[in-house]
Image 1: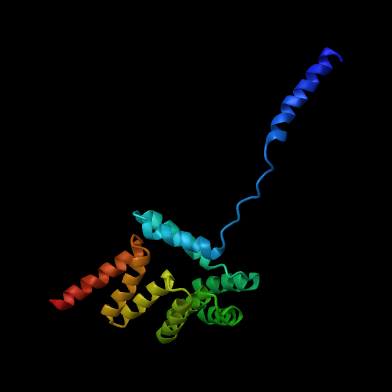
Image 2 (image 1 turned 120 degrees about the vertical axis):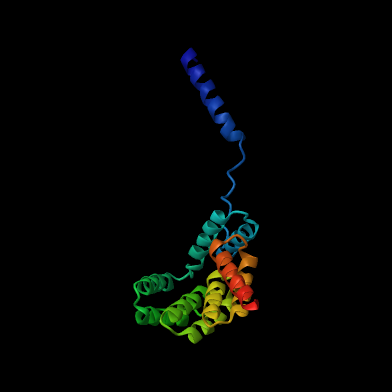
Length: 193
C-alpha cells in the first residue's frame, strides 16, 4: 500500500469512526397538541409579571383559538373576521352561523359570533353565544371580556366586575382587562359615596 492510500484509509476510518460509534438518531420530539400548547400558554400567562409579555401571550392564545382543525371552517372564519372588521355584520353573522353549524364544539366560533352580534346591536344574542363559548372554553378571555363589556353597558357594574375578575384570575397582568376592572371599581366606589 502506498503512503497516500494508507493516509486516505486512516482518514476515512477516522472520519467514519465517530459516525459508527454514535447511536442512531432519535426521532424528533412530538409537537404539542393544540390543547397542550394552550395549557402551556395559559400557565405562562398566569405566571407572567409583565404586561407586555402578557399581551404577547394573549395574542398567541388568540391565534391558536382561531384554528379549528378544519381548513373549511378556518377559511370561513377568516372571511367572517374580515367582514366583521369592515362593518358588514349581516354577512359576518351568516358566515359565523355556518361555522357554528359546521364546528359546534369550536368555542371561538361562538365567541366571534358573540362579537358580531354585540357589534350589530344584539346584546342578548351576544350573551347567549358567550355562554356557549364559556361552556366549551371557560378560559376564553375574549368571552369574559365581552361579557364584562355588555354587563357594564347595561349598568350592571357588580356583574361586570365579576366577569373582569374572572379574566384577571387567568391573566393577572393583561393590561386591557386590568384597566376595565379598575374603571368599574372606580365607578362602584363613586356609587358608594
